[in-house]
Length: 287
Image (cartoon, rainbow, N blue to C red; front, side):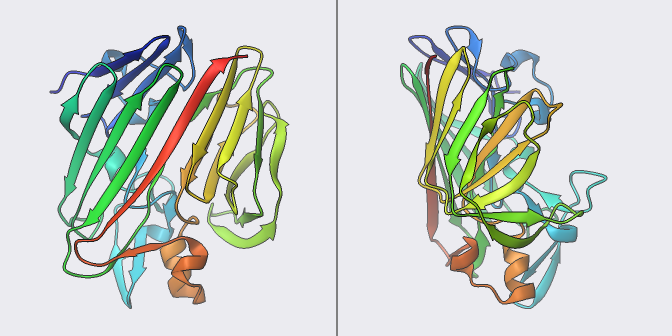
């Protein structure tokens, strides 16, 4: 069992729990939780983490079956009773610590083809803590002999306070069916709204790359070079998930079912030995 890692820089503290899905257990600014936060030694379920990595795909693969190059690959249904596969495999596996200091950590996970994902890959994630920002990077390398589809992202849960307000710009939103899978893309300018009444579980594309989340306590800015954003919150939840991701929900299967291109849906197809990387930054200051 690994010891949790605590990164500190000025007023910002980040607890990591590598063996629990390489997750962020908590992130605090001047003692105030930025993410849904639990001290790492008290966190026992990744489902209660502040954030976890999404690799090698984000959101859902319909009916836990990956359709790729004419072959159906059964996956593990890992969010019962939801019939789909969800959030990849990285968040369910232990990560090794390659490097750690007071303000930096580098974790790695090596995947051998199994029932949860049929292709070999290895991946790494880095955490760099600045005085008022957490910089994250995530990379995946295809270790299979075949070309394979991959995606990356993060699933941070930000604390939702009574006066929290979210704002971001986008060009489209994928509408959802009763099965929590996307049905069609509709024009959207994004969201600018109070979080208390927000009822959303959608993937936005044409995302401009920045989200502002503000309340009377903290001002938070989330940025990424990724062009898609999944936002999830309900009026009864005490957090809001703001997830930079590389592809549309169920993207690989939509390619097979509709003929849509990998580029249109954000799927990255890696040849053997190729690597795909992305980054996210969380900046925090007092409101």
